[in-house]
Image (cartoon, rainbow, N blue to C red; front, side, top):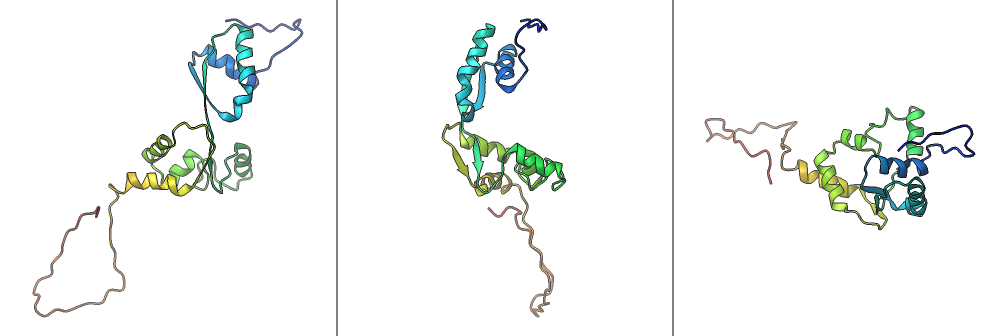
Length: 174
């Protein structure tokens, strides 16, 4: 495909989201375009551009966006915190980004389990952070060692016991 832009043409198309997505999806061989339902109203325009350019039409698969309770997810709003230096960057542990939650202790496996459990519903969901961390606990509980430490101990002398003894217990009580 060759698109040439000449100054003599009456119209110029700039690579806006609405133009770039259908064009690149078709050119790059995308068979299924994954988009959130918020772009549903733009589907006719998406297909019109492909028809006008004579390009192959990918299948659009829609799913709802994931909302988290009491959490700002807007990239525009999160960018403000980064630009103002309020946070250290996109990987700040306080941020609801993948890099942020990984620095907070989330495992990649736990995040994958959570995402797979959500499925691809078109219904808008409001999720609680406790559910995400519950998936992470399923991953780390079997491998996390458990240690016990005692402070301010009181010596106890038992006259019948002659030798000190110790006992090894499993690091994973479950």
